[in-house]
Image (cartoon, rainbow, N blue to C red; front, side, top):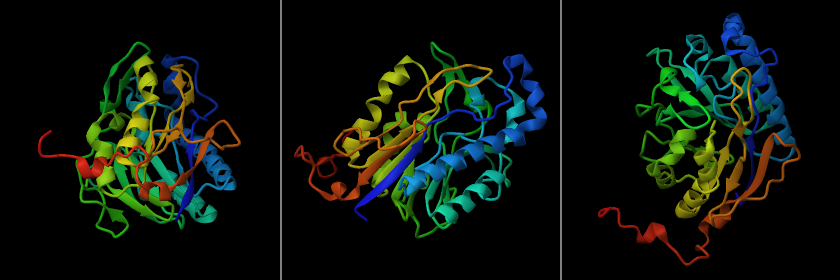
Length: 310
């Protein structure tokens, strides 16, 4: 496998009947399934477009089946959580993956049936529709910046380690950070806030990842500045590809702007060319053979690292 075409979605909530005021959100209490359905259908269209453009793998946005509700604490949104194996979102995506022959990374709001706990989870679906496993967001933010607040700890907890059965399709020894062996390459996931922690991409690289997908919902001046450098540095440092996706636009009734700027970073610290025919998709060609070539800088960080002294 020399080259793989990969895609990211960059969009916002597709449900058309959101109220204009936060105070009126209660009107949606009986319509959570309608919200889910609208967003899933929108993303099925994007997956089809990515497949038509030649993509072998597509990563959807963080919590893609809903608006980004974690700007405030509201128990209503707890009802959006669903099972990561049998819930309606994953069921629809499995059919599409098999029909289109495309690998899908699907970040959903998970309700664990056994524990009753909720997680921010990415389900990895093979091109034949099989679920290979899942990754749960490991670091959960709660705070504020100059543009707004985020209260994610109200809605879901952090990953507590092993979440997948042992399988030859799941690589690496670190059970917090699984690497999935797919028909489109060996991939890992680092959801949004995870990207700021230096050990995350290092763990995925150690597990053999060729590409790391980082679906995010992010805003604020510092986040915007670092968005342009974090993925480039990590991709260069660990000799892999990174696909970072963000929402683009704003969502009623909160009207918080998301800056978009989704892109793929390559192992030489460069942004890859976006060949997408539409603005709500980012598509790039990943040359996995480049990961086996000597670093053009002459560096060999993997050889020269001294882990025992840091």
